[in-house]
Image (cartoon, rainbow, N blue to C red; front, side):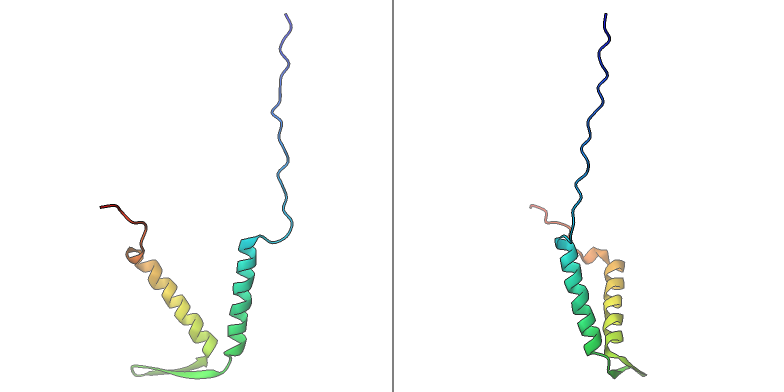
Length: 87
C-alpha cells in the first residue's frame, strides 16, 4: 500500500504596504499643528494662582494643562461613558 503524500500547508507571504496609512497621516497632521502652536507661543506669560506667581512660555502652560487633563482623566475613569444600556 502506498503512503499518502504529506502535504505542507501553503503560506502566502504577508503583504507589505509602502507609504503611510490613514492613521499615520492623521498623526503627522496633529504633530505639525502641535509644532505650529509651540512656535507661535514662545513668549513668556505670568500666571497667578492663589498666592503663587509663575512666568513661563505659553506652550509650557498649554502642555501642563494637557498633562493635567490626561492625569485627571486617568484617575477618574468613572466619568467616561462605556456604552448605553437599554432600559
